[in-house]
Amino acid sequence: MIIVLKPNQKQELVDSFIQKLTSHYDVQVNTWVGTHSTVLGLIGDTTAIDAEYIQAQDFVESVKRVQEPYKKANRKFHPDDTVITLPGGQTIGDGHLALIAGPCSVESEEQICSIAQSVKDSGAQFLRGGAFKPRTSPYSFQGMKGEGLELLSKAKEKTGLPIVTEIMSIEHLPLFEDVDIIQVGARNMQNFELLKQLGRLRKPILLKRGLANTIEELLMSAEYIMAEGNEQVILCERGIRTYETFTRNTLDISAVPVLKRLSHLPVIVDPSHASGINWLIEPLALSAAAIGADGLIIEVHNDPSHALCDGAQSITPAQFDALAQKVRKVSGLVHSL
Image (cartoon, rainbow, N blue to C red; front, side):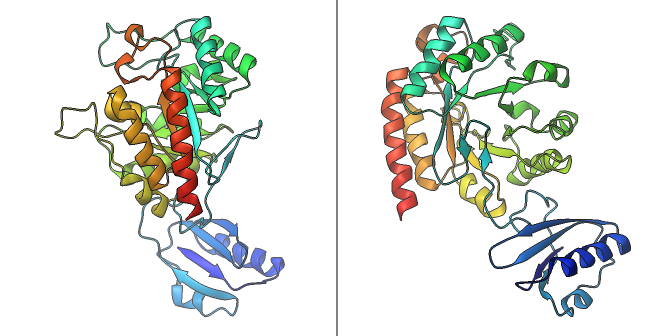
């Protein structure tokens, strides 16, 4: 249930009203204070609440029952866009296109530091790199694990770029102290115990859509994180499994405006995993920028043909430099309209 209060209400009255709601009903109340109004979002069993009685209060503008199962991630509860801000000042969701770039997998200190410097010079604000790699085959390269995280930290120290990397298990959490944004991969989107643990942290979580999951299921996974207290969630469309076999996945470009309509959380796009083909990264990235994505996460490798992981969907630093200039122009044009 959402209760919109009339403008310029005294805080004492608002606090008293909230206290009555929480003492009489089994609900939690989230408060959003906007420029012109205050919105109270009620989470819990609201069936016993008489909406007409609430509406009759002099200070209440309107009352709406929310049918969607996700509440904290729901734009109705939080009309303004959420902006993720890191300690270094980097942002995602503020109207500028965030660029997250780096190799699929960390392979050596020289490799990750070289790529980190290259993508930074091209305008990337965040460094991605895999240390723990969930692979379809148990015989494929699984990542450098803890050593890979240490190398990411060295690249961060040299370039100042915040780290974005994937976690696969709750047991690995102590190793992620220096990670700035923790990524939950597609295969773990509905690992609810992991999501709950991440919800108890106070750092941003990049949540990727599962290979065959609906938009509502993605938002419900975000809800698991937010219900534990961590509201710094970034949603990522990375392609879904369809009957098409030409590409690795099928980029659901419509998910971007749909998610932005349903939720206040930032939405980014991963054209690398969506296509699995390096020459498709540019057109998909441009389409994501044109449709209003808040950011892109792109795999960049200094020698894709010899990459230990996903070389076929990686572009070179020079290709990323050219792409970064194009997507920034498109994004700037879209936001100027």
